Each structure stands twice: as C-alpha cells, then as structure tokens.
Length: 78
Picture 1: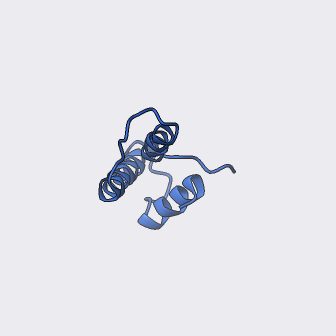
Picture 2: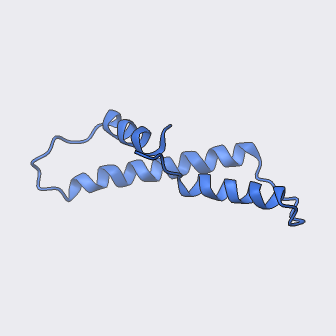
C-alpha cells in the first residue's frame, strides 16, 4: 500500500517547493507551527475515527487508541 500524505504535509511540501523554485516568496512556516498543525490534523482524524463508530450497527468492537494508531500508521506511514 502506497503511503499517503495528510493535507498539512502536502501544504508544507508545496510551500517548500515554491520557495525552492524561487517564486520570490521567501516564506517559510516555522517548525513549531508546522508541528502544531500536524498535531491538530491528527486529532481531528482521531475524532472522526471515533465518531464513525457512533454510526455503526453496533456489531463491531469499540475502536481504541491502538486501533487508530495502527490505521494511521498503515495509511500515512508514521
């Protein structure tokens, strides 16, 4: 399975690419802001992961943090 990028990772990559291609941007995202954005995005994904269980038929075990981390790592390779 090919690993995917999160939206935040894509955005950071595009900003870096544009800066590297000399678009006269001279714009970078400070590391602490990039880390915080990734944390917020991952939390939103986790919330959605658990919310999906609310709509299930009740025939599955309730998801755990380990279930989320396993799926997240499988998809995004973290």
